[in-house]
Length: 287
Image (cartoon, rainbow, N blue to C red; front, side, top):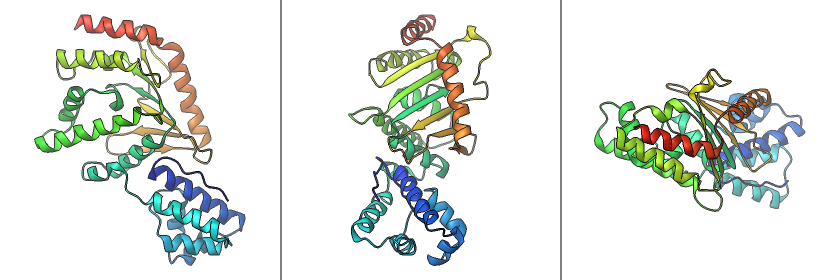
């Protein structure tokens, strides 16, 4: 067995879970039987195989024995992966601010090879300036202490580091024109944000398109979403749809395909990158 780790603990948990599921199914062992072996339940095995929980070394070692994995080298590879998957991500220090349903997304975002996103109300978080981010966060966290606001801004800026460096993902954003014309933080903040988008388009891994007002109705009227792809074939594409107090993580082939088709249609009818720059400059001039 060969395991190619991803680049973050969230992806590693998903990868490890899929390997354990494959080993179990190859041996014809039920989740209930596996759960009994580790003094747990069928649902615990299900959560482990989906990568939604951390892994205890003792549990994984017992499962490997149950599945007939006796080769010491193979066991060592898996146990090393357990250790890496259990390491806290950089966002661990922000856990008091991050709801559990969003922590998973930050981990997947870090591990992704390609991120495609459609945004309706705001500039995507990975593309926001510090001033714009602060204005958005203050609007959504009424009554929060200044220290909390500052830490939330720091978290957003820390997330943006994923777009820098040799292993940065391809980031492709389609932004509804309404988000670019909504006066977040005032005129100067918006001008700075629009100029920042123009500057970001000089990065080879970032593409920005705009869904213009004059197009009318379009394929993604249901709202914002992101599609994440990973560099390991064991990891499925994941669609992330954020809601008011929760989020959906969709990885069934038919669901991902449906969102991918919508994204392709959005890209086909939105501005080209050159047209994006022209529109951004036009909006800036009209502020």
